[in-house]
Image (cartoon, rainbow, N blue to C red):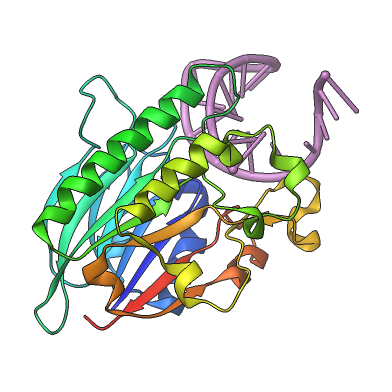
Length: 260
DNA sequence: ATGCCATACTATGTATGA
């Protein structure tokens, strides 16, 4: 079973590109971030035509996440627990069942960017990460395999960026942001790309300044695996060729393959 | 120091992103 995450940067602008990739890669489950669409206008039938069940947690103009699955998908939840006043649509989960009858909880997340530093945006990012850690800690108790898949907006370490100087004053590379991600690993979660791939993999290249041709990328899209799911990991793939397509997102898909 | 580029919106510019 293949489980993917991809920040598509707008489902309306990215529809044909997203469909083309799904036809090529055919993941069983995919988490989309930044659909930038409310639930009603989401073009669900285009994805259903490829065999996907479509669940969305949308918002007008910004944010928004979706969870699509070819395999049975149940018990869908929307929103990250821990703050009833948080209206930003950044979290969706569901339980999927693989061909062998085993289940996995898939959580798709779009973690706040946090820039610029010195505004309320950065503490919002950190408090959101605290809520994610609380969710993860509680979820581990069930021992159901879990993947926390998404755009984390956190660069784990110096191997994951092209130039440290360019990111020292950025919320994506602050010590607090990186420490919170490490705490997720300390809980027992495995960074799948780090664990199973062959070296450097960026997942984002800014549209500006020719970052893609210069390979000025960063790694911020992650598949974080609970211990039960990490045991099932076969391989991880970053489909970076998609960044070179017409009308690309600035992020590329990350795909994990599991023995489920 | 700023724009670079891209997206959505009710917009002919502004907010947001990373």
